[in-house]
Every structure is written in C-alpha cells, then in structure tokens.
Length: 266
Ligand code: OAD
Ligand code: ZN
Image 1 (spheres, rainbow, N blue to C red):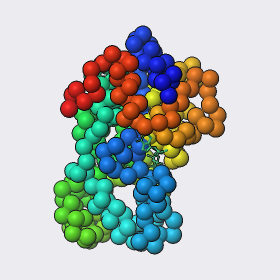
Image 2: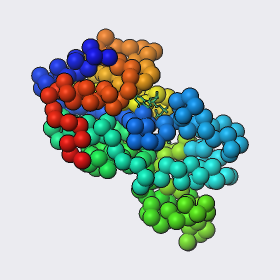
Image 3: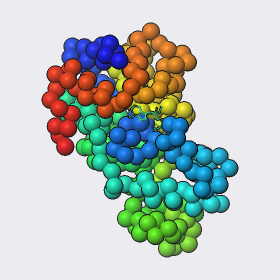
Image 4: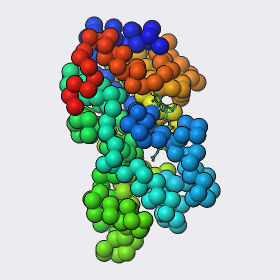
C-alpha cells in the first residue's frame, strides 16, 4: 500500500502531474454513509429482495422502470441528496483542483457529493447523471429535484403536470445514453499525465473504458478495496494498485505530499 502511495506522492511533488484525470465510483461515497452497488452484503444490489426484481440491476433498467417504477423510487428515497456530506476522498480531489492539477473528474456517482465538496462544474463529468434535475419520460417536460422530492418522500410516483406520465430524475439508466458532456470530453484523456481511479469495480461500460483511453506512457493508480477492470485483466507496466480503504489512502497521500489536512477547504 505505502509503496504505491509514495510513488504517486513523488510524481505529484516533482510537478510531473499537472493534468490529472480522476475516475470515481460508489466506493468514494461509502465513507459518507452511502451504500455502494456491488460489495457483498452491504452493497445496494444485495439488499433489494423485497422488490422481487428479476435481477438486481433492473432497479436502474429503463425498460423495467417504465413498467414498474416503484423499486427505483424506493431506492431514490434512501439515496436522495440532502442527507449525506462529502468525505476526505472528495476533499482530496478538491485539493487537486485548487492546486490546478485536476484536468477532469469523471464520476459515476449520482449523490452530488462532488459538487458539495466544491468541485467546479467545468471540471466535473457526472457520467451517470444526478438527482439535480428530472424530466417526464413521455413529453420531456423538465422538473427540478425539489419539484419531485415531496412525492418521492411520500411514496408517490411523481407524475407530469402536462401529460401525467412518470417524471424520472436525470440519472442514466441501463439502456440509456450517457450525457453529451461525457462524449464531448473524451478528448481530455490523451492529455492526462496521471490517472487516479477510486472506489469503482469498473464493471459498467462505457465508463470503464475511460481507464483504458489514457496514454500507455502515463501512470494509472487504482485506489479501491478490490482490484478491478484492466488493472486486473490487462495491467500496464506503469500501473499502481492500492487495495485498501480510500479515506486512509487519501489522508496518507495528503500527508506524503506535504499538504495540510484533507478537510482544509470544507
Ligand atoms: P460498485 O459497487 O460496483 O464498486 C464500488 C467499489 O468500491 C467496490 O470494488 C468496493 O470494493 C470499493 N469500495 C467500497 N467502499 C470502499 C472504501 N471505503 N475504500 C475503498 N474501496 C471501497 O460501484 P461502481 O463501480 O460505482 O449505475 O458502480 C458503477 C455503476 O453501477 C453505478 O454508477 C451504478 C451501478 O449500476 C447507476 O447508478 C446508473
Ligand atoms: Zn409529460
């Protein structure tokens, strides 16, 4: 664990990383109290028995949602932004931004904690959308998170005032396209001089492919409890893997870089 961190800290301290790309998944938000998706027992997909889903990921499947939106809205009620705060992992990325080292952060998370930590909109790609806006699945009338919050918290399906169809938060479901912004910024990747991948199983495509789109000359580091994706199946010579807890890792890294404490900018 320490060897990989020392190497990354050296790269940062020597000023060799000025265009860092960060890829994040649900593992950066578990220290804030949110569940991830695929961890055995604690992950969301192991805790959906009561909804009788044909398979766990159906909760985020657009075809299933149109027929039965109830499981998704029950899950949405649990995950809805407002109850959770960012943690050291988010504030570490904010520090990279403040030190002008962050080219872009790509996140799969829909919890909005990156924005809350102060990652600027132009640095951030919310690749799987977020709860911040919503739209009718039939007529595309737009709604805010506040417009539908009361319905979600009262176990009612939010319905469009214009056509009575279901209002769905702008979260990317299986079977839907990723936001244009994700596609547009893929041009960032050849510019990256360091890739930091955090808290993701890299199981969901096309997001996972971002990890492979950076130059083979640059170091890629994975910080997560479990080795994943091409870090496992086709590792590169410059890869660094740190199998461990994210908070411990970023706090250690902050120390090794000689920065002040991670929560500095809270
Ligand atoms: P996963 O649940 O698949 O993976 C999270 C990874 O983070 C796992 O490998 C965990 O071991 C690791 N992890 C959890 N807590 C950690 C901690 N404190 N320290 C270090 N590692 C930790 O989540 P994602 O990869 O984000 O889609 O899942 C990708 C997509 O699948 C999600 O965006 C979601 C889901 O279907 C949508 O919501 C549309
Ligand atoms: Zn409508």
